[in-house]
Length: 121
Image (cartoon, rainbow, N blue to C red):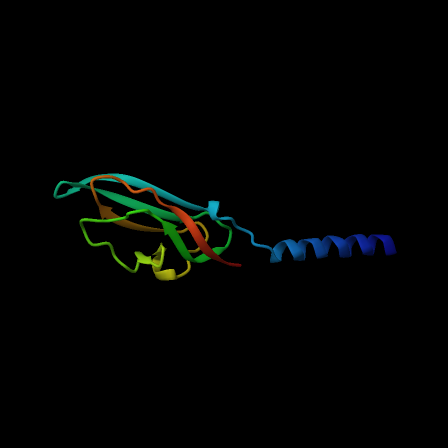
């Protein structure tokens, strides 16, 4: 009986410790871009979807995008330069499975990827 209780305690402790660790990596943030087929002058319009694949909400999501520019305004509450990165969704939470979308226009698509986030479990 004492052995079973020790084993149960060890199992519960393991679950508790795992629950406190960071449950999501940056790779849980998916960034997909599509050419909408629309044009803004001579520039194609791209739609960017930043999706949270983490089981928890995430906030303060930052993307890299070297040399990003747009010939049309981008809603700054959805995507704006902040320091050396670009802040998504004004830093607000993105629920598990949810996404944030914004559009920009330029002669080419820019590479984008997550560089920082805060997990909210």
